[in-house]
Amino acid sequence: MAYIYAMSDIHEELALFKETLSLIDWSGENQLILLGDYIDIHSQDVTILYFIKELQENYKDQVIVLAGNHEFMFLEDIRSKASLFHDTAIITWLRGLPFYYETEKQIFVHAGIDEEAEELWKWGSENYYFCNKYPHTTGKFLKDVIAGHISTSEITGKADNDKVFWDKQSHFYIDGDTRVSKTIPVLKYDTVSGKYSSFEKRKQDDGSFVWQEYVVKKSK
Image 1 (cartoon, helix red, strand yellow):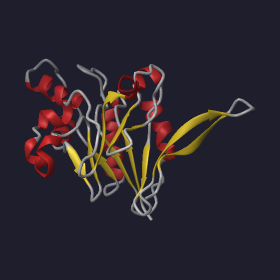
Image 2 (tube, helix red, strand yellow; image 1 turned 30 degrees about the horizontal axis):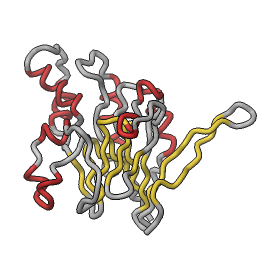
Image 3 (cartoon, one colour; image 1 turned 120 degrees about the horizontal axis):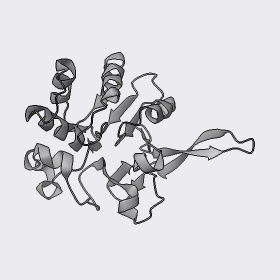
Image 4 (cartoon, helix red, strand yellow; image 1 turned 135 degrees about the vertical axis):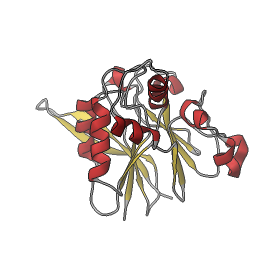
């Protein structure tokens, strides 16, 4: 049995990210896929990039790091000299980040893909599209599409919705508007059963908090 975990749109909330990482089971062949937007637009604080780069180096075959639109724009700022950031190791690492990650059953991406291209989506979607697709897409597709970029509160029209959103067909959105909600939704996929689940932090009678796993999509 193996699990795939996904998180997105951390937006420099490093302490919150470290707390949420406690949910990850690093045993076996389990993987963590990060879907982009680790920093904010025109960011001056890139501490989280160093942390994620080191995390990926420590778990070489388990942590997949994708590019989001904020990383895309950060590199543009560096290229245009709007940003004076000059750490070549981080810049080289950012430039090498892929825009999507595909499994047998899923496509993980920051914003989305060109679904009208169907099986040719890899060639029909430009790099900028992977990072910036708007609005979101729902409905049936060839594979499950897991994305961030657009907050679940915007998708559902409910300001307090910071949980994983599933459209009951092929799309999962996991941007919990972290800067506002102080929550980083985690989508967990069981590669054997096909079940998707997530986690909710619940307050106990004694005032402490505990993570509780709940089902998003039942096993096949």
